[in-house]
Length: 124
Image (cartoon, rainbow, N blue to C red; front, top):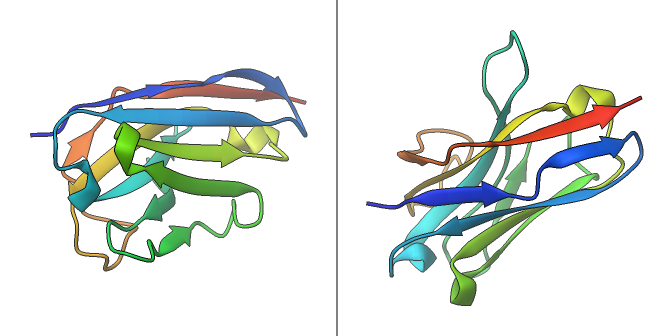
């Protein structure tokens, strides 16, 4: 079982930056693929970014955030990060951290563990 706690959300103006953090419990963090998803009001939850557990740590991004968001992980701290730059009002959503046992394949889906979410609001 993995417990995930997100932090770092808040209110920012368009063009600004935020860094989200997700702290994971347990001693097997390094063996998990980690992802970020988001859900805007009235919309379905969507994939944002993910990073694989494997050496080399392949990453995957939604087209809407490529070039603006960067996912990274620090296995020593059991933490995954999402650096968000050049934020836009359409990035406003609750952002969720997710984990699954590492496969390194199709990082955009089939996650088993979820955090409670952190609100990101981008004003125009």
